[in-house]
Image (tube, rainbow, N blue to C red; front, side, top):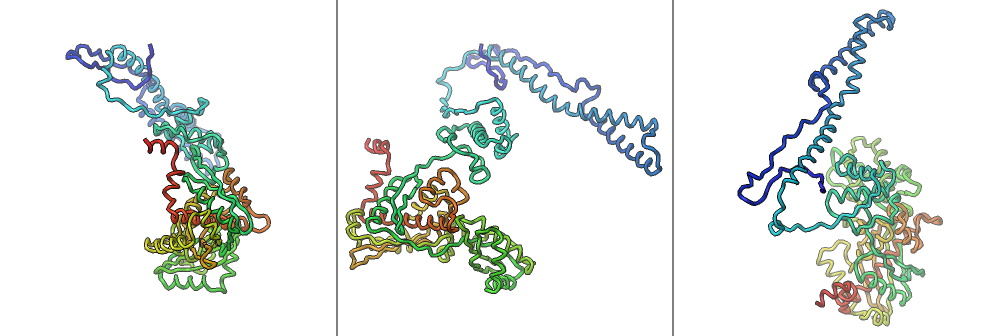
Length: 570
């Protein structure tokens, strides 16, 4: 007979008016043995006696030994009372050491005993119960997706149970186990058991979890697969670039690729780097607006800049302070530091430099209270006019002149229609919407795809996608001049996600992997111009599709799977 372990339930019979007669006789459980039964007194009273005895005789002996030291009496000369005290101390110590855990041990004994009694009671209940009622009287339950376990040992099973019970924190698995892959596997299994939902389909194998530990992601349970497409070649500043784009949006890579084709056929695009400086803006507070203004004048005084730069530049051999901009709100002062950061995106680098300057300023401004290292005047991961006007990261303008025949044959439209559409959509339409840095068709699409492929911070797509797209008819109205101006592209080729294998491979494809050995910062600057060039291609192609009335048709054809098409047809 198959008897399964489960919580004991009272046996009951369903159906019939005489179910009271058929109810099995209840069995009173036998008392479970307890370790404290061997003690002459109750456990709590015994513990209290030995506790009191231990500390009392300890105090007595210390007091006696202090008197002997003061009177120069040898410590080994003891009286009968002292001998009794020593014996009592040893006895109480042995009890507390060996028997104070009786209550703890007893709980395990009771649990094991109760499990045995429960099994017997449940066996009797199962045997005495009549057949279950008809399935038609029970609501049909939806079966959850089966949870597939990947555990390979009893040791891992015990760790999973400890994580589920909360004995071992999930975040500490890597440090406790010493194997990041096993930690992710155990955490994944614990998550499935806790939620009752399967993670089948989320891959676990084939990823280097050691590479992200302490750097990129905490408490991993797998990784998400995003396809990477290639647009290009993009002919930019005389060089060809194959642009990797990680996206799940159909038509995006194809559209950008068409723009690259049009640019290539017209002789390529050119770019100019206008500015390169990452920013961080702490907020500090004074007792009055006058004191805040005094610090503002001090920081903006050219005579003090060299001293502040020396203090700031101690944070890194690549960090070089460029500019300090201040803004006052009452007695609060927002100080925007801008510095070059080599090939790193540079947020951590500039933050360290700012910390050095704030500590230095405390000498002359002891009443300065630092409210936050970031006061949102930076401004990071948020649309802000200060980034749109002053720039942040790399400020780039990229342009190309598309010949008339290319506009007609490749882009399937004409110059006059594109110029009019750009004015009414990207300029006037965005103004009507109250856009901030959004005077473009879909710059964020291309920026996000390139950022994910190359290991950039996807959240910085917010300010990095600030872009104004301009179109103008040139050469007697025959050709099209198109440009994109992007004041805050925040990219790096070292640090963060750039060191992961997949992202590093995409950077290597572009020829900007790691730090430049020839000129510090040149790799990240080149990456920024490539991003702007890809945005130029994407803007050109999408605007042409809208002008030619092909936008919906293209997405219906390429942005739907064959399954979706079949469903739509049916």
